[in-house]
Each structure stands twice: as structure tokens, then as C-alpha cells.
Image (tube, rainbow, N blue to C red):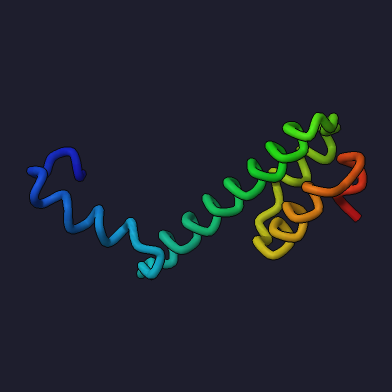
Length: 91
């Protein structure tokens, strides 16, 4: 949609969406925004583990990528920085 607008008209919606205070109005948008945040956080966890040279078994990879609880994902991200084995990440 934005690509069809002239540059001046694109600026307003881009500015709104770029702010962290924007509140999605529809349930559909809130659901998919949360899903996207969870997917990004899961990718961050796996990236930290892999950057630390830890082998990530498929079961842990799957549990992390399927999790939609942002609080849990945040806890796992903090733990990913300090665990000695990927298996120690999850309870």
C-alpha cells in the first residue's frame, strides 16, 4: 500500500508505525504483532546460543520457536547468555 503513495504521503504512516507508542487497533493486528515479537525473540535466543558455540538440539529449537509467551521468552533470552549447555536453558 505504501509503495503506491507519493513520498510525502508515505511519511505520515511510516512515522506512526515507527513509534513504540503506537497501539494496534484491531484484534487481528494485535495478535499478529505479538506473534511477530515472539518469533523475533525466539530467533534472538537461538542466535545467542549459537553465537556462544552451543549446540541446540532440535527439541529445544522447537520449544523455543513455538513459544508465544513473551515473559517466558525474555527469561530464556537472559538465561541464554549464561547457560553452559542449551539443555540448561529450559526447565
